[in-house]
Image 1 (cartoon, rainbow, N blue to C red):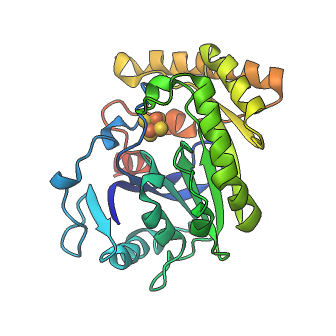
Image 2 (spheres, rainbow, N blue to C red):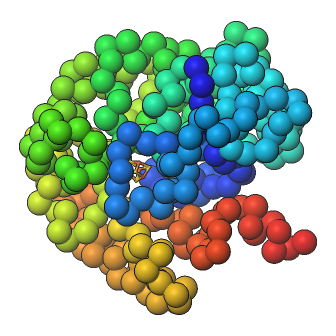
Length: 286
Ligand code: SF4
C-alpha cells in the first residue's frame, strides 16, 4: 500500500443525497481516467517518487501513507480534525480513491486504531475499478455505513484503454462490474450506491442509454456541468454560465423524474486563485 494524499480538509459534501453534510474530506492523488472537465487536475498528476512519506516529522501535503504509517495517519486525523469538529462522516475522494483499495479498506476498518466518531464513509468514484468479486470484503465491516457515489464518465476519450471506443463499450464495462462487484456489495454489506451523472445537452442520449442498459442503476442524481475555470477571468461570468448549466440539468430532471444534485462546493467555495474550500473561508475570517 502506497497512497498519495493531496488534501485533508473539513468541509461539506457538495453533491448527491447528503449534500450539505459536514465531512472530513480526504483526497487521494491520481486517477485512472483523464476527463477534460476535471476540476481536480492539480491532484491528478502527482508522482510518488517526488513525494515524501507521512511521518510524525513530515505532515506537509502531499505525502504518502503506507502500511507502516496508516495507524499514525489515523491518529493524526483524530488529533487534528475529528477531536476538533463534530463530524460523523468521512468523504474519500480523488482523483480515483479506489486506485488505493487497501488504503480505503484501512479507513473503513483498522485493527489498531479507528477514525474517531466516524459512523459513515462516503467514497466518490468513477466506478471503473469496482470490478473485483472480492470488492465486497472492503465494505464488510458493519460498524460503519458506506455510501458509494458512483459517477460514470461516458466519453470514451476520457478512458486510457484502447478497448473503450464508444459509449456501448463503457456500458458493457459497467454491466460487467455490476455482475462482478456491485451486486454482491449491495447484497452482503451495509453499503448504498448512488449514481451521479454530469449533465450537458450533448451527453443526454448517452446518460439515457447508460441508465436504461446497465441494470440496477437506481438513486440517480443529475449534476450540472461545471464550466472550465481556466477559461474565465470574471467570477461573475463563470457563475452566470454555471447557473445556465444548472438550469439545463434541471430541465432534464423534470423531464425524466431524476433528482437534481447541487454542486454546493462550486457555489460556496468557488475561488479562482486556489480552491481550498473550508480553509479559505476560515482564513478570510482571521
Ligand atoms: S474521473 Fe473524476 S477525478 Fe478522474 S479525471 Fe475524471 S473528473 Fe477527474
